[in-house]
Image (cartoon, rainbow, N blue to C red):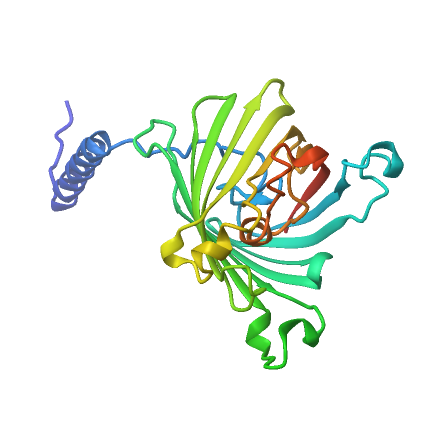
Length: 306
């Protein structure tokens, strides 16, 4: 039998092996103790747009979203103008770009009042699949610039008269693969308005989607403006003579793919920017059922990733 000489090199090698094994055991213990990573739930809505309102869906970073929104005229004249299709219409073209996974900025232009808009959407909280975080919360701001002639704003015209603001907190929950709901309080401010229109208004919006096939859903929404006499600039006796505020209620169908979303729907306002629908959407007191004031609308969105 051969004698085996134990050298310092062999001892050093043995110690090194034991140390590596011990470190490996510690690493496994630490891995075992780590909490599982919370996975985000799928977006509550297929698109960042539902009718004319924002949703909590924020596209991934480096995504460009093109938006076309079209609202025909009122159906109240029936076949005379083909149920609003031949009547004067409103249209908006917009582009949104996701700078970060939770931050989107957008620009748009609307036919009515030649309104230009800047929009910002920031996701504060994301619902998780475990429901440890039960809702998604997004902050939304839309700033409009009225492009009408200077004479619209009176003799004391200033550029700031053209600007209006819409601030909203969007709160949504995806209950399951079919049902998603959203609620959103908002505040609207116009720097300049008609003498019989308040500068400020608080509103509450609701929205919902029920998915009945892999690509198709029934969608609904409502914007409900509130009148608080305490914050109104119009005397109460005058306000009582005005036509009541009309909620902007929409119901329709959505067909969506990974890159497109298409909406066809009926609504009760021809405005497209949310502040337009909330600040001055009225109906006649003698016309409580809107007398056919229903409008056909179409939306198309398209995504590109860069």
